[in-house]
Image (cartoon, rainbow, N blue to C red):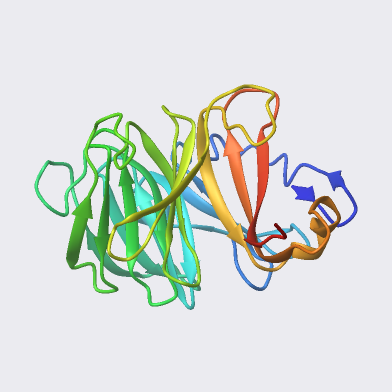
Length: 253
């Protein structure tokens, strides 16, 4: 756990029941949800980093990623390539949708997941190089992207997040680029590019998060006069900088 307020870090836990943690989500109360496909469970920690629950073992799924919205927990099952929605308090199943395949609403290999404030679900597929969108009931809405090196498409999309304006932020591990799309699926901007050690470069990016709550911790790094709306955090698999930090906002000329 990295604490940007006092520039410290610590291990969340050394509990050996956690075998291969792949996804983590922190809710508004500071609770942490850790998805572990080998343990076939989601581990829950409170604000003080004390483990409070081990969930979903009874569902027989392989949790790869996890997002919490309201009283719901959304989990990617990497075995069946499904999205499983459960009650975050007791783990009772609410909904399942998706499966392996090439038809609309199906996946070859899920790379990442995001859930917006209206509970629409966004899924990246790193094999078909596409993004699929579902409504809150798991009904297929749309799909875009194809496997090309063109600027509008993807090679290996992985992490995804959705900001308060509904814009989709997606990182492509193969090209080392982050891209922003609007709800009409139009490319608005891309940034990054692979160059290990260069300022602002990305190196096999795997995850992205938009943070509106910790702007003050990074404000001193911005130029004078910058009006920062959000901090963009991107995790890199390789290279010197494992976490790249960007700012969204308006900047002086």
